[in-house]
Every structure is written in structure tokens, then in C-alpha cells.
Length: 247
Ligand code: PXP
Image 1 (cartoon, helix red, strand yellow):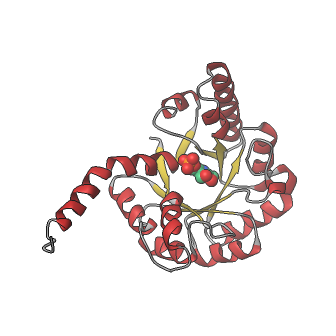
Image 2: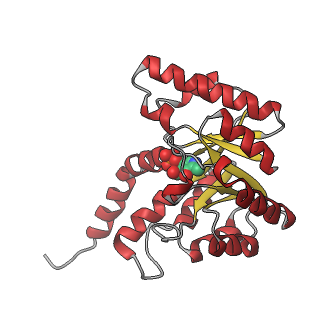
């Protein structure tokens, strides 16, 4: 069965828009994680960025206490965040690029260009009992480099597929690249995840990509939740306003 990891960063983005620097505020990404798990997802993903744009240190600490499925920490391969990950002990970390020089033209991590540093982090995480994943473009050079690092997982970047979704020939080309990368990674013994830009329209097309274990999806689910939850939110506020006696 294909597993669903939900990326809750966008919940924190919404909170930070109003409450940046305040140490509290709504919506709470940890509460969101609880609801996602109760709804049946298989994992929670959060990206603790160096610039702390959305998820904060306190969020990942509380997520580690609360998440009962699997906690996937997305992170740049930098000393500060490596130290946090080693003490937090998520179930898995996914190394992602945050700086321009770490990114391939298609947006994945340039594993081939940073083989030694990534292998070292892979080893330190595994020694601490944490699995690793590398977020890479569906590019055979990057798959081969990922194999050399000894990582357990790769996450194939579906951004180009999502971007070209409305153009059938470009879409099919991207699906073919994803399928080829998934086959190569699987043959080499890696487990294969995928994510970025997946939504309710493009998801069914991923049937053409073999060997997928887990999809990491954030934006489309959180966006859908804003609209599907709006009716209830308005009704609750109207109910509170009914108690007003001053008019
Ligand atoms: N996978 C990785 C590695 C990501 O960095 C992200 C967030 O950009 C996602 C998956 C989820 O992408 P989206 O929010 O577009 O679903």
C-alpha cells in the first residue's frame, strides 16, 4: 500500500504570518499533526529551515513527543541542524537543498556534487538509529550518487511533473523520468518516496511510476483543509456572536 506522509509546514507558515517571534499562536502544526494521524496518514513531515521561516525548534520538539506514526525531519546538511536532528531523533531525516549551490537545475539535492559531506551525515544519522532519505531530481546521475552514500531512501522530486501537468507530452516525459529513476533506485536496493507539488488532480498519474513506498504531500492537503473547514469555522464564530447582549 502506498503510504502518505503529510508535510505540515504550511500550517506553521500561516501561524507565522500573524504570530512570528511570539512563541505561540494558531494554527498549531502539532495539533494539525495529531488530526492528520487520526485521519489515517502514515507519517508527519516537517522542515526545520535554517531561517526558521515556518517550523520552529519548539514545534519539532513537541512533534517528537506527539507523533505516533513516523516523524520525518526535512533538513539542510548543515552543522546546526544536524546537531538538532541527532538529539531530536526523528525516525528519518530527508536531506533537502536550502542553498543555491546545493541544488540541481531541477531543484533536487546535488548529491553527486556533495558526495562526501552527504555520506558523512548519512553515516552519523544511521549510527544514531535514524534512517535517511535524499530529495533528488529523477536523474540517473543523482540516483547513482545516492546509492553510493549508503542512504536507505530517496525521495524523487515531483515538482517538474506537477509543473508540466497540463501539457500531456511534457507530463508523460516527466512521468517516464520518474519511472526510470524509481526503477534504478529500486534495483540498487533503495526504497523510493516521492513528493512536491502533488495534488488531487495529478496524483492518479503516479500509477505509472513503479516501486513508490510513500508520498510526501503538504500544500494541496492543507489548502483543501482551509476550504473544507471554513463552514464549521464560520458557524462556530456566529454562535459565539449570538451571545452578544450590547446591541
Ligand atoms: N517533499 C519535500 C522534500 C519537500 O521539501 C516538500 C515541501 O516543499 C514536499 C515534499 C511537499 O511539497 P508540497 O507542499 O508541494 O506538497
